Length: 224
Image (cartoon, rainbow, N blue to C red; front, side, top):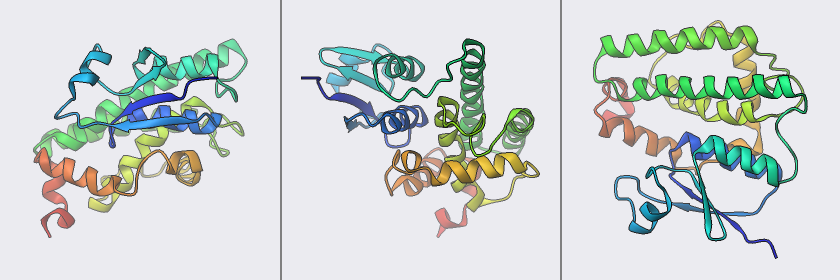
């Protein structure tokens, strides 16, 4: 009997969401265990060499780092999300790395304390989305009709903007029709919507407030 996979998680982590989306797309049963990263349990620190999520526990072995987890799932589980062609697959992996760089910019948007720093991060993010718009097919997915791991990687990116857009219009995704179409398709994908709980927006708002970020200063909802 195959052991149930255990995914050690945090409710806001975008890298966890990637793994959840992949598992759901593949139809693989798994147990999700959420932890508090500000108060990491001892048992988790013994499992995770870097003290980060996600961690995938397979029997008595663990796989850590989201990119490695995604590749392990591709190698061992049904319904592959990578393209078959080696060159296209390599290109998709490169855009997945690009997605991680975008997340770095978003972390800055979420945590910088003043307008000048925010504007710098917003400019960096905008430039990346311009490049993404130029490559994107978005009919309806990153590269056409087939949902792929690139889609799984960018779904958490756009989820951040669902909250950011409620705070203000910063023009980061403006005038990018392919991204707008892709974002809508991702939002409606069952695996994407199920990757977080209903409390995600409130948790993200609390995170912004906790870090005393520039965004939280603009957020009238947080001040109410």
